[in-house]
Length: 563
Image (tube, rainbow, N blue to C red; front, side, top):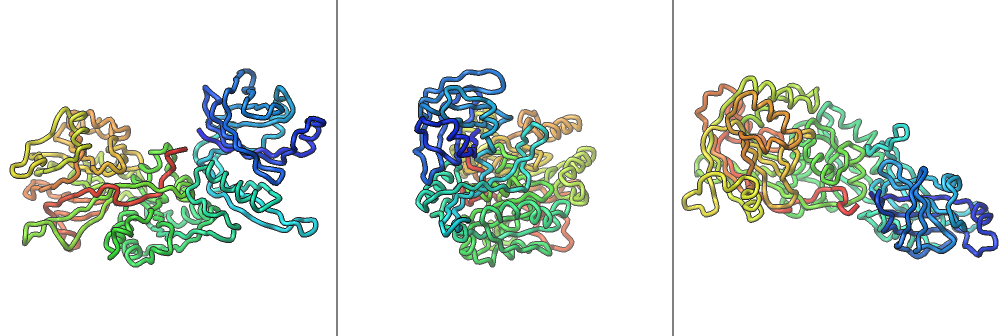
């Protein structure tokens, strides 16, 4: 756990403690430390104060003594007149410095220590310049902005609040200020370091698409009271578009001037992200447009894509934590998928209509649960569990032919986890295999989480060029209930009714002549792409479709993996 430690020490305290010893008086200190319960090695220390930046010192040869409420250490990398007192409070390291003492006095440490926050909570380092209170002296300062984490009694929770705090460090020269700001940004792992002009310059702009109807209908409130507070403090400006109907996010993304924006933010659920990404894929400059980083503020029922991104770095999937992720500016590659339906006249794959996907494609049991649970939208994520129970009690069986092809990574995975290839080789199509017969459902996922509480594809990777196929064979209702519970932790992959395959492409040929009087949805990213009974003819023709994976085909804002 890396922590940033900010300590304010009064000059008179230092002077009284170092009288006659020739120790330079510092007014404030900024530290970055790699916390470790077993060792105190590897601390990086940067001192601010006296109008200059102290030399960065990597501490080594630290002797540790444990006792009482903390740990007292003497670091050979520091000046001989300084010692270190360190302690752990929850998962955050707290380090305090006292001068001219061979052994640190705990009371002095507590008096000097002002704040300790995680590096991952720092969202901005800015430079500012003001006139001094006395005369016309210029005051140069580094302002560090950090998100506040929720504290319940003595316990520091990882969940963040929407309160942003500022910490100001003053310098006597512009050069020292800029150097300090760069050092702080590097230490905190901020992506956008810029040239650290004064705070009025170097601002960034986001295109924000807010779905007010997503989830429980709190999209606007979540954006205005949580996410916008953090992003505005981090120096962002916004162009906000609030959707008023279906497919509007697609139209906005398709026509936007993306050259004006650092990234695009979707405030909503997986459906909002799907509409946004579809709009990018329909642009004339689609390849470039899909490389613009996408940020997600969760306000929907499923929030699976957002959950996958945050949980990969052990971060919470709440609106403020996701806003902090966007503010810090790191992006990572993510595979994307293209879904094409069969042209009924030519029997080839459609060349005029492509559905672009970041999350999943489902059919059978999984799409029935997803689409038919819309009537329980007011329940949030609980709607999926309730509808799943309904579908277990009243089962539907489907028949299909599934053909798939793997890449090298997929072959290795399938051989390891599936005890060999699944299905029979396809004649005249080298590398392809086919599975035929009766199944309950198919769920093809690009990321690990299928909903915010369902670890549907535990082996899925962000950019391995594969999509993970979860196939559920016919089984009894008791085992289906076991599967429902097992999906939460990803344990369903060990169930006898489940087959788990990595594929780079697959084709599904659903059998239309089944006995079910309802159901029959093909869903892409939680939205209906085709349905068997479509009286309005508003969707694609229900029938065969093909999915192809484009490796690292887009970018998403994500927590830094180096912290």
